Image 1 (tube, rainbow, N blue to C red):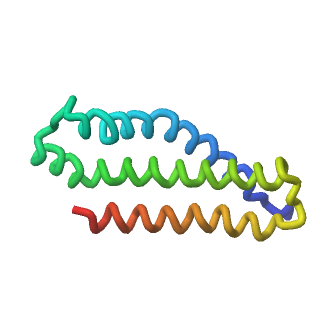
Image 2 (spheres, rainbow, N blue to C red; image 1 turned 135 degrees about the horizontal axis):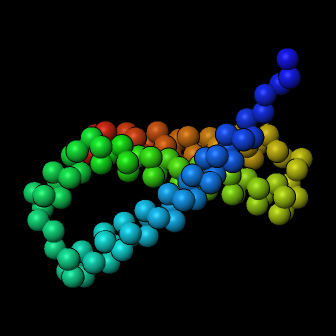
Length: 116
């Protein structure tokens, strides 16, 4: 039997993370980084907490964060591997990039689990 490659799964997380980052993160940054601090939008605190306590909201936020982290890991890996021609450090780069994405994903999940 032929050895299966993990590369298609990594490209899938790369493209899904790119879409999640392009669609969701700018809106989140606009609302929570600009509109609310400048007091242009003032959501009711109890309503905002109710939305954030919803398990579906937490699951969607976790998916956006995890996919964005894996998108970063794949892009950074190929920048180092192809762009800077660090092909001799392939294993170290893989472990650091994807290990960082996994560690960040676990941390995001933990924070979303205990936050509220």
